[in-house]
Length: 198
Ligand code: Z5A
Image 1 (cartoon, protein in one colour):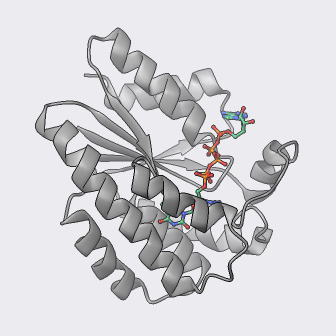
Image 2: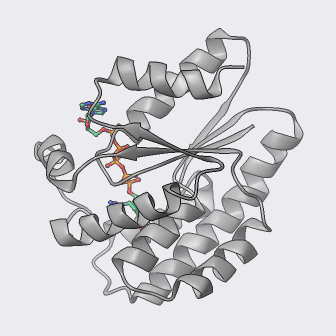
């Protein structure tokens, strides 16, 4: 089973992912827990460029770099794990490109979908958990973090567009499940586990 977690930064994805990994381990499986951009040596180098550098990165370059890291992650880690029958938990995936580079930066969404298709070879998640949180609430949670990255310096208006993009995708139903990210971590974990429990 391939599970992705999506939402704006600070919505609690990393916290939920580690809780889910522990629940899967306790139920006898050995999940692969990974993240985007990154999760491989090349991907982590690209992540550093994307998040930690002071380069002036054009939106299309950003989308291409996200997908370069994604192609490596899918090839090197996600497909082999799924082939071995493991559960894969991934903090962000192609929907992040549609939400951030599409709705957030304003790039053409059909073009982005083609890029993502090339990077993933058409591998879609079975389940996508969308942690919905208002940008002001996320900002308050992250206010104590030092050294904002390139994305953390964006405005609330940018994150509102990203959130609306997610809400639009989640309305399509299917693999999408929207969770109330204002729940305390243990309640959020219980809600997610109800969806995923083997
Ligand atoms: N990006 C993109 O533009 N296009 C793409 O295709 C991809 C990514 C793949 C990666 O940033 C950036 O790349 C991301 C989108 C872009 N930037 N933004 N924005 P990242 O990997 O560094 O970080 P992130 O994915 O945005 O998430 P994050 O900052 O690590 O937040 P999180 O994982 O969602 O939340 P958390 O770390 O679990 O929790 C944040 C804080 O809230 C922390 O203090 C927790 O203790 C607290 N927390 C967690 N859960 C709760 C609950 N339930 N209640 C209250 N407080 C909580």
